[in-house]
Every structure is written in structure tokens, then in C-alpha cells.
Image (cartoon, rainbow, N blue to C red; front, side):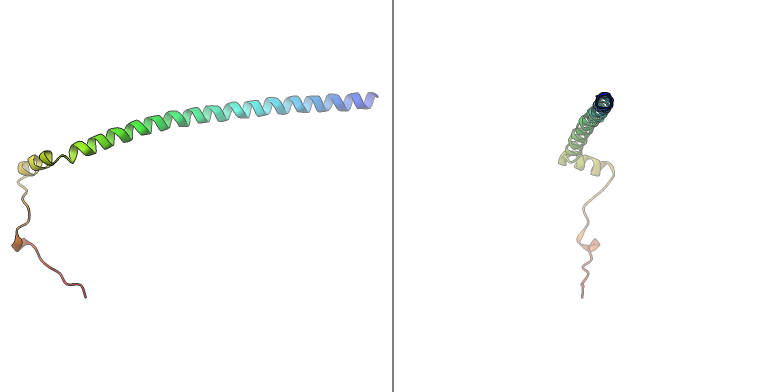
Length: 86
């Protein structure tokens, strides 16, 4: 009976240690998940800001004003060359 009690005690200790280990690992995974979700939120906000900025910069009037300020013009027909691919 004494050997059985020692075996059961050892199994209970191993079980307790494994429960604590699994809980700690679960906590670490939760912390990593929380960090990843916060980073996802930051990246989504940055993406939305960049899409807004892209849409703003693609405004036709803004492009025309910028082209006029830089003295840009569409290419003339004499500036165009046709290249044949054989």
C-alpha cells in the first residue's frame, strides 16, 4: 500500500506541474495574441490613412495644378515614336 501511495503522490505532483505549465503557456499565447491584435489595429489604421492619402493625391484637379506648377505638358505628336517589334 505504501508504494501505491508514493506512486499516486508522484502522479499528482506531475499532473499539478503540467497544469501550471499549460496555464503559463496559455497565458504567454494570450499575451502574444493581444500584441498581434494591437499591431493589426495599428497597421489597419496606417493602411486606411495611406489609402486616403492615395485617393487625395489621385485627384485630377490636384494633378493638373501640380503639372502646371512644374511646367509639364502632354507629349506632342512629334515627341512620340512608334517602335515595331519583330
